[in-house]
Image 1 (cartoon, rainbow, N blue to C red):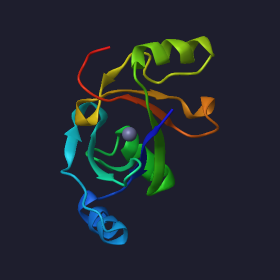
Image 2 (image 1 turned 180 degrees about the horizontal axis):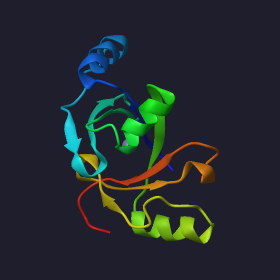
Image 3 (image 1 turned 30 degrees about the vertical axis):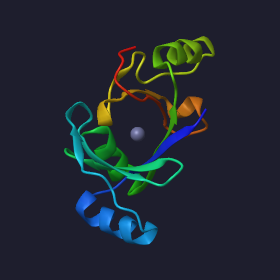
Image 4 (image 1 turned 90 degrees about the vertical axis):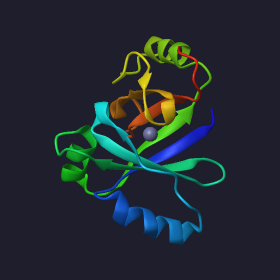
Length: 135
Ligand code: ZN
């Protein structure tokens, strides 16, 4: 299963992005707001995947609470899947605890779903179905 991206929580996209761009010699895309999750996100392609920077738009959002608890840093890993609905059914069958039992719209118009860190060794894990077709 290909790695799609790594999510990194930051307090400010405006401060974080230029540092990463100059370190990696690569330009980030445009920031996008995901209102349902209370975040602004920005992707930076790395050649074999991407980094997703997440800035909370409110302190009580999941990323806002993460920052308050743990500070800036790695927030989640995301894998690309072809059929997210089927993948979620398979995960449920294996007893994986899902945060999103159904696919929902995430950044870039993709379908996404998160699984609970307790099912993945303490790592918040996201599954992403790229593209437009609804599951
Ligand atoms: Zn993500």
